[in-house]
Amino acid sequence: MSSARINGNLAEREQVIILENFIRGEFVASENLGYINSYEPSTGQVWAQLPDSGDEEVCRAVTAAKNAFPKWSSLSTHERASYLNKIADLIEQRLDEFAEAESRDSGKPVALARLVDIPRAVHNFRFFASAVQHYISTSNFNDQHGALNYVHRSPVGVAGLISPWNLPLYLLTFKIAPAIAAGCTVVAKPSEMTSVTTWMMCKVFQDVGLPAGVVNVVFGYGGKVGEALVKHPDVPVISFTGSTPIGQRITAVSAPFCKKLSLELGGKNAAIIFDDVNLDEVVPGSVRSSFMNQGEVCLCSSRIFVQRGIYDEFLTKFTEAAKKFKVGVPSDPSVNMGALISEQHREKVRSFIQLAESEGATINCGGDQVPECIPETHKNGYYLAPTVISNISDRSPCMQDEIFGPVTCVVPFDNEEEVVERANAVKYGLCAVVWTKDLSRTHRLARKLHVGTVWANCWLVRDLNMPFGGSKASGIGREGCKESLDFYTESRTVCIKLG
Ligand code: NAD
Image (cartoon, rainbow, N blue to C red; front, side, top):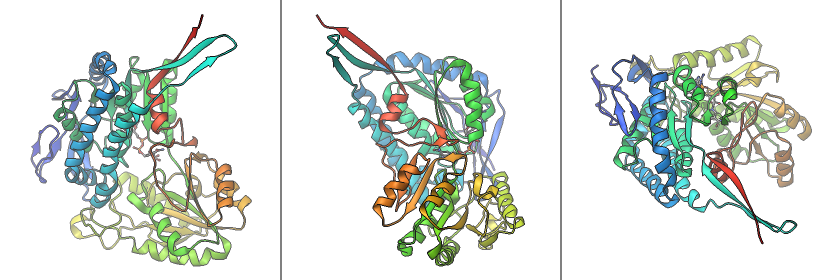
């Protein structure tokens, strides 16, 4: 394969794409740096290479962001919003190109990237372009002291944004859009496994004439680029989405600097299915919530609690539906599930399935073998079939730890109190799904489940106006309309004694 340096444009299919850092509005050749291979999960082949950046590149990017900050932060919100709208329009125009790249980078079906990932990235920019113009501060007249108080909010400064591989553009733009709308400038670091669409987006920034230095992107490993960003004294605010252990490390490393932190971390989410539901709706809903994006969504259900009266029927129907959830080559439009992100990750997922077997659990479908339907041309890709496990103890690591793959456990329960206690008995607290026709019960459970989001009779219905995030080991802080704009700004109370 030959390689191509084409600054933000996708090369011919046969060429390995060489990514460059994007600093001060320009793609910067990384002559002195080594390159990291990025694999196409559906084939196991190298398809892109990114610079193995470090402290020096991060320092350059932070300086660029710092220099751009005074002018960018003093633009009116209306002017900043107009750039966000232009970015949204251009990504939308290039939707097919972005969707194909996202699929090749992460292994997800192209159809999913076209339907969910890229439209959401577009929506993130449009949403915050509008939101920032409706972001008003509070005031209060204190009649005891005859003083008028109001809150002035100003952007914090240079924001360090670090994102994972599972929803690459979707999640990084959910940080970039509110940060620049609020007036911050940015140094972003996408996952080293899925950097291509971020690099393509840098070309969009150039094409819309976003002022140089407002968004800078440094590619590379988390331990080098991510950590350099977290330690940099001129980056007062860090927004991180990723695993709980790395979130803990970022908390420790940033502590001496007293940085503002937002942490969106892992999950071990419960779905709770009561015996009053219509299984014709709940079974497809649960298959989707378990296996969408190869089960590589932090919000996927991986523990399904089913009320005993309908347990056997649910398990049979759910297993049948999981078998029909088609795994295959991501470019095939009929495929529901593509390849996992890496060989290493597939091995981790497999090890959980093997552990469940060794504990005497039942593997109802799927398993640790490569599905037979994968064509010879893609045999080196990282595929696994949707796997349903039953007869498993709540104490098993498969019921306690985040697997982050197409594996879900189905267990029975008898009553409401018991299931709430069992659903809460994990270290994580990201989301839960409740399936029931009983509205009072929905409200009761919503108050008792220790999670950031409760979905009832649906899953992954997102309204960006609402706060999103996790409790316990699933994170600190919330992202959303007001929450994100609050995060990227600092409030100052102004108190004026009136005569
Ligand atoms: P990860 O924690 O390994 O990496 C996330 C990002 O952090 C990557 O860009 C990585 O390079 C960087 N990083 C690694 N070490 C670092 C360090 N020492 N300092 C700074 N940055 C560092 O996570 P992942 O494997 O990319 O993603 C999967 C995880 O993300 C899962 O746990 C999943 O639940 C979680 N996730 C959470 C949410 C949410 O909204 N709560 C959303 C998506 C994914």
